[in-house]
Image (cartoon, rainbow, N blue to C red; front, side, top):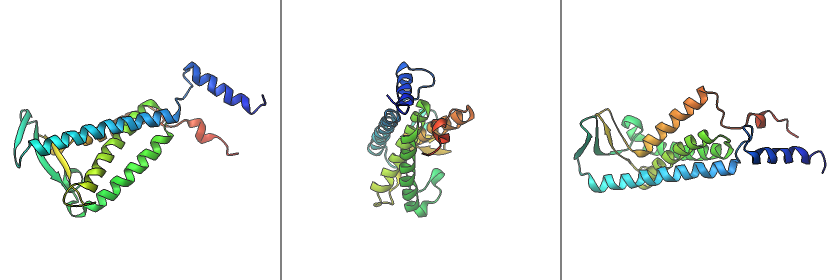
Length: 190
């Protein structure tokens, strides 16, 4: 065994003991992020399918009085229906977001960050799919929204996932929990 093998053996041994300094393997965390994203994507698209088939035009179903109710809306814009004339730009942004979140999730070495990024990735992927594949046409599709929050905002399950992921990232940042291993950023290049 030469001196170059010792740090690697030490790292493997530390990781195997489950010590506090051991970072979970990046690939396992990446697959966990993808599993969270896929679960959110399936639930979001399933609830959208339900909303389209069960809710008619202007029909509302009270869930919690007038505070939360189901109301079908096709949103061509961004949050609060802003930018309705430039839907294709939101398609491009959603596609870039999916790629960027996926790239960053590949590098993550923190379990809480993994789940937060999985939520963001699932929500962004679902919205990207809506923009690409729903009416009125490819790249100009409208997002299906159906959860009405007291008339202030109408959203969907993907929006809930994106919000939860974003809040989690803010909390993790304030608590000083880093997404990647700080030692990797400070390593000199060989």
